[in-house]
Amino acid sequence: MTEENIVLYQVDGAVARIRLNRPEKRNALNQALIAGLKDSLKKANENSAVRVIVISGEGRDFCSGADLASLQQIAEGSLTENTEDARSLMELFAFIRRVSVPVVAAVRGKALAGGCGLASACDIVLASANAQFGYPEVNLGFVPAMVMAILRRNVSEKRAFELTTRGGQISAEEARQYGLVNQVFADDDFETEVSNYVHAFEKLSKSAIALTKTLLYQIDGMSFQEALETGADVNVIARMTEDCKQGIAKFLKKD
Image (tube, rainbow, N blue to C red; front, side, top):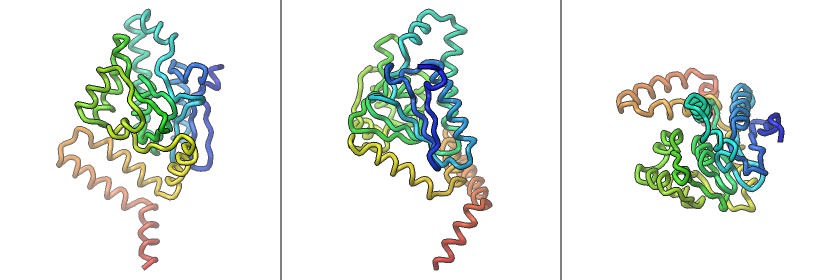
């Protein structure tokens, strides 16, 4: 697999589809794949026609975490090399939140370690009933460190501790109950259900969703009063958008 097609990118109307394309490696993460994800997300974010982004994996699994070569580099790397490597994945997770449109993980098969982190970093997670999620890093003496900031916001403290220290795997339905997954769809209907789910964003205001996404993540760590004041500011901004003006006019016309 060449680095040029390690990540597949396609725009289908308002949907940008990003596919991890290392099926023979269970879509394991390496620097080329992480770089390809960043580039594809950037292209989608700059495309005014795109209303939603879907990240999926080719083959049986979504993403099995770091590949063997990357693990070898971790074991043998210097402090500087490991710092640069870690920050590259951190930048990917952070960029997903800065993308203006919803980023959806469509998970079949296994999403483990960094692959589970990638899914968790997305705004929405849709899972096939056969999907498995887990953070097995502790089995290798490693830590699911960067995803912790996201995981801790998705699930309870007790669940986060259990998920990151037991090193096991949970089913798609368990992940939904924990708060890691939004929807679970039957294996046979998965592609159709995902398509129906994401195409619904085409009918919604792009500017309103972008402002909502920014506000939702912006208020993390704010006091109640600060969050209210920030919400008031965003409310005013939303009122001035063309989408809002047209939406109100259309609503009033129905009456």
